[in-house]
Image 1 (cartoon, each protein chain N blue to C red):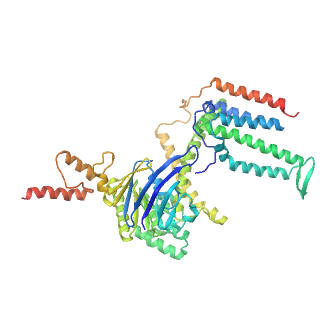
Image 2: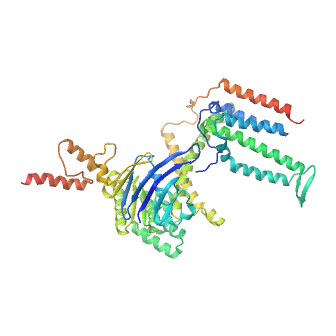
Image 3: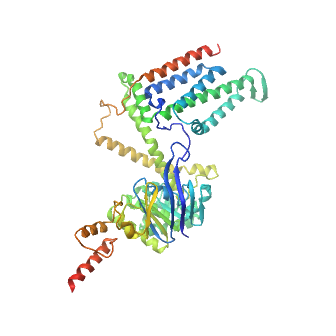
Length: 284
Length: 265
């Protein structure tokens, strides 16, 4: 099922003198099984938006359709607990949410809360531990003994173990070293394809956005500026300050008079296109 | 998130907002003391009216103010009900075992409710119109004489400022953890009390951990910027005493005189 936002607005501290806009009049559809990135500066409403995807926040106006649920301002938060087993949100720095005494217990928290029997939950937890690339020896260790990167994987496993249909990632690679960054993104990409997920990612890394997304939602100060494919977003958008490295490099080549058929979204694409162009002209 | 007003600061630009915070603090303390002089309808009425006048002067909407006080008014009512059942004097209207409703009990309970309401009003006006950091600064400045007796007033001030400064940060961190745990199906509205209590653990453990980390980082940041605890330093907010502040105390004096005249002797 597609995710539909129908003229949705959210205000913090609604109806008090401290009322501020979270976001205003968002209207868009996210196709099932697509990979969507949300970009925008701090304070643009990205984090507020994703908290609406599993009913942590209820819109002040408008209607959201997600995973068979209809959320309007009248919806009671209590009625949405089932929605949370279908929409898995990996929040920023998820390693801060670990609290159980062992890694295995912590991963099993979600299934247990949603009524899966203990033995089955632990079996699922162990399988998910391997899925995120951790050794099963770690299962009985305390999460606090692990390295930062390992802790993040455990926290992510704690979401994946619920087998969500929609996976929401809030800056999943923040604070990781380049190697771990790449591994993490590859893990999400693999799962996205294998599990036929609908993935929604908030990111400041334009390289990731360009490489993985089918579409990009660009927010600024709580408003939707543009929703389009990454190629459209990164072509000729002077307002957009951050761009993928391949696009920045290509723009410098353009200044020197080199033209490619379309902007390259990844370094690999840039290299292929350049090879074609240069070798193509020198070979004759 | 919630409408509770106690301890919240509402930035604004009214006469009350602009008063010297030290003056406001002392004013509030003295006011709470003179409330004890009131002992009849006129004197309680006068004080209650005075707090309404202050709310009006601070340009805060009365409806908003009382929406935020609602839960505390219920709490006050609870205290009042206890007071009704356990005090005696005058005509007895009803009794059952040790519980009784008497004339004096009812009157005392009513006055007690007014007294609680007046004190809640005045202290909420203080916190609504004064930024927490300025309150901390004024406490430090009022404690200054103690430094001659070797009390580390500066450090006490620093502790209060840090504590106040980190309330929103910690509230923020707590909200993030609550969100993350709710996303994993922790049900904070669970029906059983035992479950509700157990649900504190998924918040408390990560929160404590992050608080220790924050404290550690803060002390390292302060040290690396060369912070010396007892060094002589100036303040970012320099407080000035204006004629309005003296006027406020004039009004308080007037109020005290009126109370003495109007109270039942």
